Image (cartoon, rainbow, N blue to C red; front, side, top):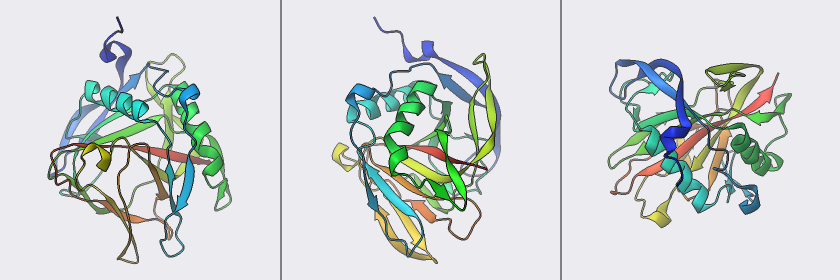
Length: 253
């Protein structure tokens, strides 16, 4: 019999977490999960890229990044870890983020397989910085229940994170920093999802709407720069929860 998911998980960091309506929660956990077969190379789909027109700003989707079975496994992992209101190490103004979240460090094998699938379709260089050979291993997973939304914002840029050599703690990487957000949709309209689209703006005007679809990934520039993409997660109007994972795409100094 397969061991329960929590038998493969442990807390590797505790950070102050911000709450949706303001305030803080101390010691909000970040987990590590030792399940190297969450993504299976032998079942890998063949992603393809579709551009998103944002008036010249970089944004695109990759279709078929993960299979439905793989996405279901990722949902099961995060549900077992437990979603909570507090987002560890994330600072958002009161009322901006209205969802639940769990942050975790994925196994090297899982992130290496994900990188293998998407890397050929990513910009190999941005602003003179070359694509890193690693995605950050820290995954910020969000669950939207009926009425939840993420109001208009830009995503911050981040260092990469992984595990210490002995696997006991989360560590920050040197020499690399994120430049792209990757939003991996773990379910979609085909699962009964209602609402919850990601809307993208340019110069304050709505330019594109991306509908959640299982295995679809949306990529766009983030950080404090002229090319960063203003966006929002539309309100979920139905009873089926929406699951989406934010992963940071890294570029070397």
